[in-house]
Image 1 (tube, rainbow, N blue to C red):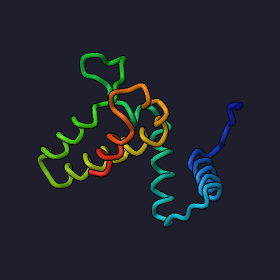
Image 2 (cartoon, one colour; image 1 turned 60 degrees about the vertical axis):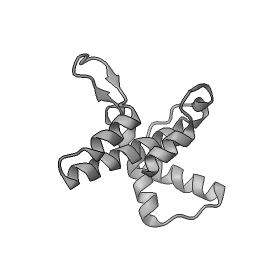
Image 3 (cartoon, helix red, strand yellow; image 1 turned 60 degrees about the horizontal axis):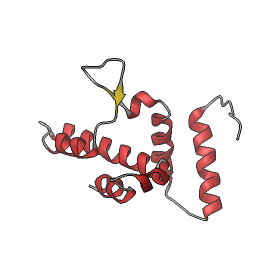
Length: 119
């Protein structure tokens, strides 16, 4: 598989999603398609997925899902709670979708990510 240059990442993911849905014979609502394309485009930049540690400015880490959930539930405003839960769902969906094969060797499996994202 060769690296393929693209001029518009969002259009690339839109076309790739259409191909995958067609291949799997799955129909989704337009809003769902739009959401998934935006999610893929956003997380194409690793900085959107990882968070910099205040102690190590050179190192990025993914915050554990349970920490994200706790922070969202303890948010000071309904808007902050909604943003936190959205972030939790986005990260869970992305990780479960792209890295599910790697869960075979982990203590936390894909079902955990699906359940946390469903919250």
